[in-house]
Structure formats: structure tokens, C-alpha cells
Amino acid sequence: MYRILEARELAEKIFLMEVEAPRVAKACQPGEFVIVKMDEKGERIPLTICDYNRESGTVTIVFQIVGASTKRMAELKEGDAFQDFVGPLGRPSDFVSEDFEKVRGRRYLFVAGGVGTAPVYPQVKWMRAHGIEADVIVGAKTKDLLILEEEMEKVAGNLYITTDDGSYKRKGMVTEVIRDLVENQGKHYDICVAIGPMIMMKFVCLLTKELQLPTIVSMNPVMVDGTGMCGACRLSVGKEVKFACVDGPEFDGHLVDFDEAMKRQRIYKTEEGRAMLRMQEGATHHGGCGNCG
Image (tube, rainbow, N blue to C red):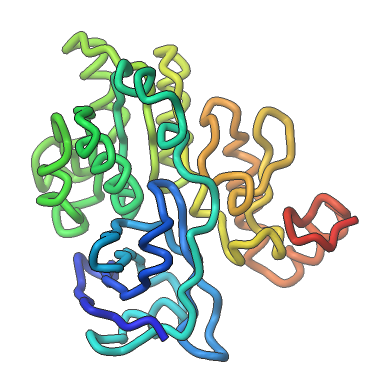
């Protein structure tokens, strides 16, 4: 069992939990995810890692209520436990294994939308721990839905916050802030990392492609099973079939077919839609499960 040491609500329907999981904490890196299960009959829920502490053996997760399972999960309190807490899964962010001198020589811009702030945080924290200052844009619909502002403030070089309705800081979308920084303020960036709702990542990539700014996105929003067995996270990247959970979750954003991914996500929600996708995609419907021939 994996004991919950802290459980709190960050914003409406958005919760943070710090979980005692020493083996996961010892091995995990920014960009990876875990699969949690509340009990023997519980649903497998893939969640990106928000933070980790190797000394105390804890991993922090952030999740939003989107269905029955996450609603049940939100009711867990300090002292309760998960039956399963599996990870780290997926591939870590590229900069973790790249030549450090190359990484240090780049100027990074991180763009977080909504709950996407959670997986952006450990990446920026890693940068700070290695002496690299990165600029961060955090976007939320309203002030009340903004999360991890204080934590991000401590690790970001410059933090820019924007809300769709203008209820806090700047008013507008994250794309407007990117354009302002690059075109009006003359800032130069070598790499952009964007994590958030798929529609947000799509429009960030349309802009950064125009600005000739290489962009990495995390396709964690399409993951369901987390091991390549369900086929939910199948997507096209540079016209090649990839699976977010086993090949990612991070990909070159300028190569991701977002329109296909969003359409496929809508179809996958119904049993009839899933059956149609299995029939259409055949042996390429799954990825990494070992049962596809």
C-alpha cells in the first residue's frame, strides 16, 4: 500500500496528493508518469508526476475530477492509501539525458495551461537545480483555477501569468504572451515546452512554427491505460504511428497531428467508437503491449 501523506484541493476540482512511494521517487525524472489504482476493483489512472523527493521517498501528483474514478480519488484523505502506485513510466524529458553543456547553452520557454502546470513544474525545478533559468508562462481560465503559482515563482527565471477572463494578472491566451515576449520584448528562445489541453498545445505549436521556435509537447491528455494496451493514445507524429504512453509522452509539437488526435479522442469515448477504431486500425491499434504481432 502507498500511504497518502498530504491531500489538499488546489482549485475547484483540482487536487494535490503527496504519496509515500520510495522506489518510484528514487527512479523518476521530469516528464514521466505513474499509474495509480485505489483498490483491487479500481480503475487504472495514469497521472504525470508533479514533484518528487528522493530523500523522503515521496511523489506528488495533481489531478482533476473528470469522472467517477477521479471523484472517488478526490475523497481520499491524509492517512489513506493507494493499492497500486506504479512507475516511473514513459520517457523522461530529453534534456535529462542530453549533453548538459548543450542544455545549459539553450534558452528555454515553458508554457503551462490549466492542470498542465503540474507536469511543467518538475521540469522547471530541474532547470533551477542545475543552474538554468527558464521563463515560464502559466495560463488559466480564471484566477480561481490557477495552481502552483507560489511553487512556480520559486523556480522560474521569469513567470508570466495570464487568465482568459482577465481576473488576474494579464488578460488573454498564452499564445498572446508568447508573441509579446518574442516580437515586442525581443526575447530569444531556443526551445519551447508546452503542456496543457490539446487545443492549447495545438495553437501554441501553430504560433511557434510561425516563429521558427522548436516546440516539445506532452500528449498525456490522451492516455487512458498507460501501457499501450488500450490504443487510446495512438497518434500520428510526422506521419508515423506513435503511442503517448510508451513512445512519449513528449513529442515534437510541430510534427503532431493535433486535429487527428482530438477527433480520435472524441470517437474513443463511446464503446461503438472504440470498436470502430479497433477495426480500422487493426494491428496498429495498440502499442507496446506485446500482443499485436
